[in-house]
Image (cartoon, rainbow, N blue to C red; front, side, top):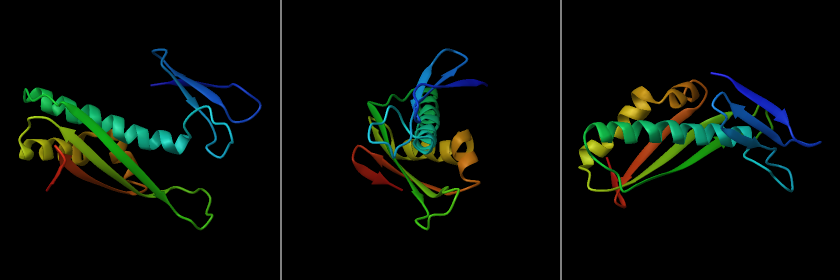
Length: 141
């Protein structure tokens, strides 16, 4: 796995491209005009994307189709000005919609976060990663 980064302006706007030609723009979130996500936001996007792929794959293998899958990911950092200012907690709300048994929906999310999601497994070495699951608007245990 390899990416290429190129600076695009005299500030913090960068373009990254992977080996397949897919591009992502990065910028410093503190800038007045931002041209992309911050690197720390990309980490949160990464955990959502990784887990989302797992959940869809697990449910498809069971011939269960989601109508919708959304996630809200919140990363908390220390407010003490420490450097580096890493995440201490990451919480993910997984919002599923469809004709899926609650038990199977919960199991798919559990399998993703506890076993398959490489991003979650890497991030949990540095921060507490937690998640909750909602199916058709109802929180499931």
